[in-house]
Image (cartoon, rainbow, N blue to C red; front, side, top):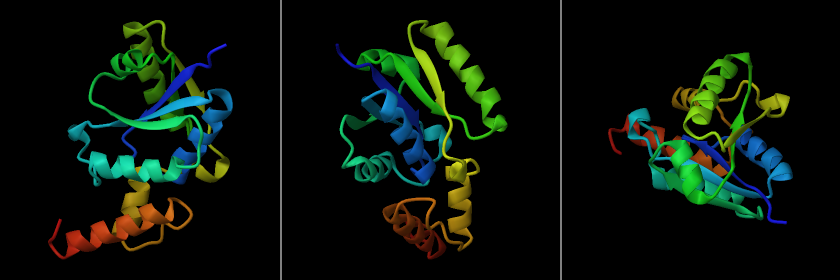
Length: 167
């Protein structure tokens, strides 16, 4: 029997240990996964699409059944083109629920055959978001234990460049 392919979409700017935790949990259920990195420029990410994909490729290099792919379309259209049947979303807190619920219902309206599966991260990551990681790093705080060492280094370099006026 062929295993179900699932898609874990996001901007991942940057990919945090919370994202990693959700991915590892999803792999226990769906042994074939695509981490789909949104190329949506409307979000004005700190890292380029290519940088974000490289960060994730580094994080998943030892994981079987995971591939990293960009997408620039409606999520459900991307999921269909990949032959996937499931979208994975993380829920950290009640505050995430309303937005994620609306998105899941809209996706279902567009594509009834695609299911959304919500997973909760380890409690150590329930407060963690890419936005908070960037804010802490920008203000000179440590993000050790919240992101990989690669992301930690890239954040320091990016904010050092911005402070010196370079990009």
